[in-house]
Amino acid sequence: MLASKGLSAEDLADGKPTKVDFQFSTPGGQAIETRAYVTGRATVDVGETSVTPVALAPLPVFDRYPDGALMAAWIGGTFFLAVLLAYASHLKRRLIRREALA
Image 1 (cartoon, rainbow, N blue to C red):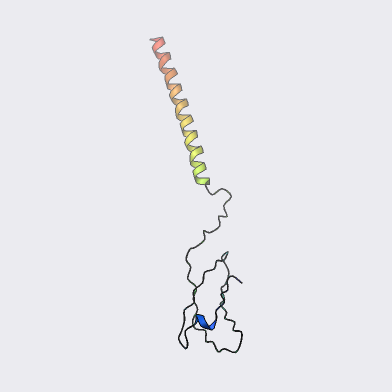
Image 2 (cartoon, rainbow, N blue to C red):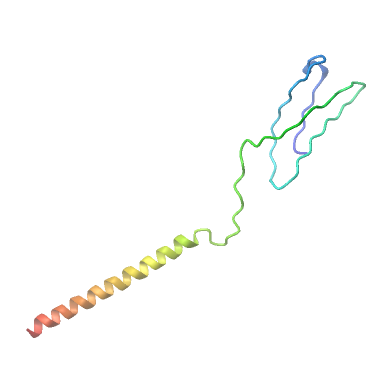
């Protein structure tokens, strides 16, 4: 049972429909069934029931590395920067050698 609410005859209007609200939460993925139990000798008519979500829970992430794309971008960027700096160092050495020979 997800939720229950006890009512008495004093809580209901005589012969008129009465709206009853109460909140509950589920872990999701479950069917919802509403029931009305009456104790005593009263006659109760239960009308339409509806369930309105107030807030939706986030879906579970089944990925072992949810930030895998970001990690790959960092690794790729670091590798690119290392190659760029190595090439710049190589060019600097070649330029120094040319100046020394000239």
